[in-house]
Length: 278
Image (cartoon, rainbow, N blue to C red; front, top):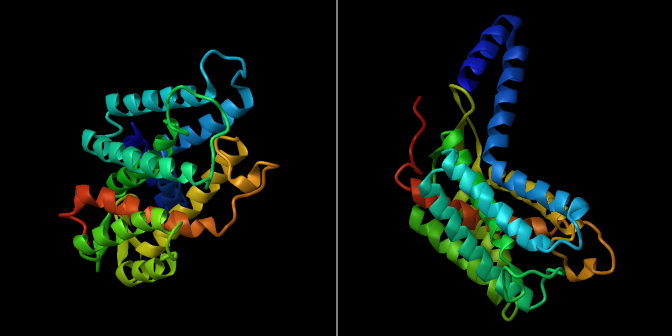
């Protein structure tokens, strides 16, 4: 149905000139992006909706409702084949990696979850792992929908080593000097020469992969502001009143993006360095 609609729109746009064709491709790009971030978008919508309308005296806590809702969404995506089993396994790994970091970060007071719940580990409600999984879900689905190809892609082993160093630094910077400046240099050195090629309809477009990382990190930062605004979690400075998450957090999300990207690229490591057909 969508393919027929796309062909019909392309047929109608072509005689109207280049601007109409560009507008059509832009709409297709937006629809594919919406499909790629379906899981994350639904989770963000649930954060806001549950903050605004979820009954305070309900027998099921808001956090537990979010956990069950995330499981239901994941089940529907698998049942409708909008998500493959391989992608689901990677997303499960995201859940484990994210929850491990959450356990540490809440223990040292980096942020907190102010509401009660039963489905939790220590101070971490289980729905939080799905927020990390949403990033992995987006990358995995976008990779498939846009048929990602790469030129001058760094070796897979080097990206794994960088991702491991980034993840370790999320823990060790509380006790040792923060290695983020060196990690940013390593990210630029490894990924700076790389271009990502993505297909909206028939032709592959291209952009620097680093720019793609920054744009996705920016949207994650915006989603984090929605999460704190809805009191799903709070930073210490937000306990007396909400304000936007500092823009400097964008750097942390950029580094997390690298971890996410490397984990998903493990599914596609044979194709990661592929050249785009000319």
